[in-house]
Image (cartoon, rainbow, N blue to C red; front, side, top):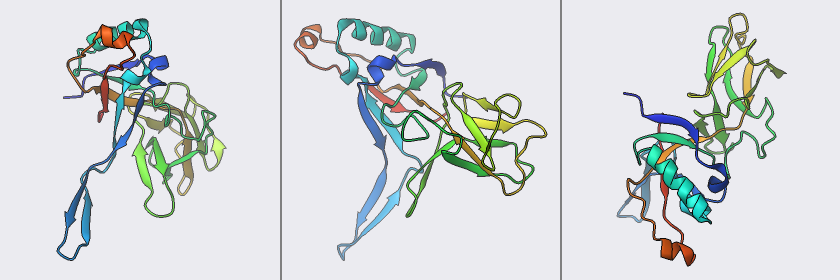
Length: 213
């Protein structure tokens, strides 16, 4: 059964003032010699956020409560814009050569958008499944392709599909630039809002967690 998901963006002005980042799960076993054995339990990091830091007014708080109710708490996922990491490039000015997403073999038409972190030691390739509509630029062998006539992008999965006759030839690098959102859900079914504390400057806790699509 597919994960219930609403293709809607959490209020952007609140998200951009929130806190959070990637989480990993690592098992560490201490040996008798004092050395360690470490094992990564997750192949991909999972991001967590707290939207409460972005709420500064009662109007914003009411907006989030309405958003929470429509999502039925933890039931439905939604899009979240990570202020630190939402682009294939260092800025929002994306270019078609930003990220290598594959190499042509003359037959493969579909390529998953990915973003690579690091280079020298253990590069991490993160699948990007929620690109921003209209932001994806693609190049084959360094030549930018035309959206629609050369390729299409599924904004629900992040898969780039080349049209018949436009499939990358063997050995050609397939690259892409894009903006993207993170699929998340509320990590609670209960929003505790103390208006007296809020008026005094207290920040409500509104936890969010990344979901796998």
